[in-house]
Image (cartoon, one colour):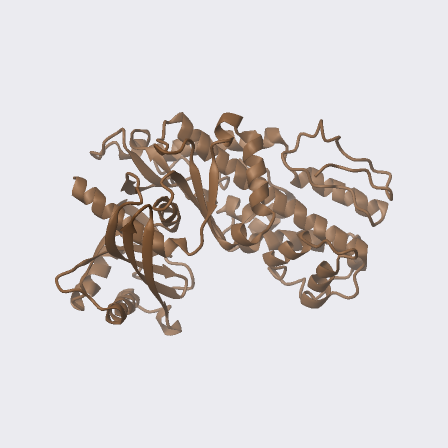
Length: 496
């Protein structure tokens, strides 16, 4: 987009296209509205649109935090958690594996048959619901007992082979402090679960106890973070994949790094020239070191969240937070008598009532009178009659919030890519550069998000690097990826 001067306002465009310092350009001028409305959109534009120099500073800060997090767990907002998964899938591996995922109130069990032949596979999956009465108890083992029952039921459904033990990987929705490929302790439960003896549990040991009690032909060979699963699910079919990103209600990134660069693993006997997948936990970037350019609206959202001063990057780029940022800005404009005639609605006054999916509708509204936006405002949010100027302002606010989220994510990806290039992370023998695997409804469903991220990468990376990147958007990757993790764990064990 280029800036244009509005015929209804005395406020000119900020820059000509040639001199614009912005990576992404969002039109600040409105076709409708008063001079005061035009001015406030220009003010919001100055706050929300990040100049290239600001993004380069974000990249520098992110790379510094990566290095700090690879040295120890104390000096960085990025935890940089080793996955202990080393090496790369080729797509030619064969075998049958189980994957278990606990995500919110759902338990997914999946049998994956890897057929080789450049990534062919077959999937058999079943979903179980965790009963509400199992969300809280005095003994965490009660919940794991139920999960083991789900595994037993699944094996009855698919049938088992005599003398065959299923190598299995588990992807937990709980925060796990991983201490090895198949070991880790629960750091926190979340998702509405409350078990006083849950935190600190060696989750694999407890799972094995319940599995052995039921005499199930299962051996847990790996714990799998969902972002690691996203990376490997894509890598089995696209061996050049080196980054995996989840961008949904939350966000995270995993990538390959040279083990010699992971200083906090120097006490272990890993080959220093091999590559290992590292889980960055980038959701927390900018939380304590204040390295992200936040606005008053961001700080307000953070203060009112359930975890103030944590997951700041996540709150600026994902999930329910994007819609809430839009809502906060709209309420501010209402209070300034610059929107909806100074009148809000009962629904709009409720936190998180402006669903992030509404942003997709408003941004994509190309009707003459912005009728799709009118439906969101009047039918979904129960606002009284809105003007075309109101709707255009709402669309513009959505563009500003959505664009900033995309460029921040693009800057974070650029930082990881530059780190990998500088530390010699291997590329595929058959393809130069790195492939990036991304999953999550925000990235998949927000039509303008992917193009904005790609444009940001082109603007922030040297052409010699940007031209070799490719992005694969994958669905239903986590549970399949967990099975790939089981395969990789078995592969690693056989090589040692």
